[in-house]
Length: 326
Image (cartoon, rainbow, N blue to C red; front, side, top):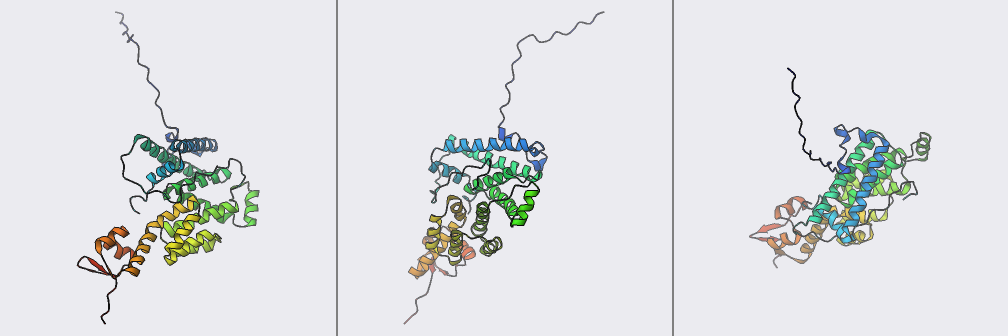
């Protein structure tokens, strides 16, 4: 007996729409096993997509004020604390030297979308940096990727983005620190040496990061000496921090570019608190505890622990200095 063939479904099958995947999310992290990004051509294509997304992000922000707000929104500290090479990057938009304070407002959809775009850009740059390290790529392209990561990370106050990039560039700076090393690198077809301006830029960022974000003033001076940095404005920022000189600090901050100003923001709160404490010490014998905490933005325990305040607390009043009897 002949077996009857089953009859298939004759209706119209629904057409599946292709999944729209973000080009920046197409690749994973090389440290997690992603191999496609090890190809130089794929790296360059991926970098083109990153820069295109960044330009779109800047265009959507509109003006410089809105762009600064987008960077501030991503800032990790909000809760706490030029050569003529081929494919040279255009300078990143410089933020305002005095960013406006953030205000608690309901997040609008466009702002949320912009925040997501910036987070995706920073994540994509991490993937690309890992790919450059894994493939041991040291050419002009790699230099520009690291510089782009450093500058964008600084504007976003994202130290996990800018700090690894700066360290990698510093290693190249030390490798090509003299003429003989640079000549040897050229003979080896290694054209990833930094220009003198780029070396000064990288070292200056690292010095300010050590002094302002990490609070390691001695380490900042040591790095400045070891790398031979000659930057009057960076020196001025270090001197102002060492002397707790609020006036000099504000003067230097108005003079530096947007990147250095952004790094100085890490120490801004500390400098402001010290300046406020000095003002109280000069003008008052005692002050209500609530007023002191309100003006400094710190609790009494934090003032004693972090800033070494030695004043006495007496029944809700902070005794700054006692009046000697006649």
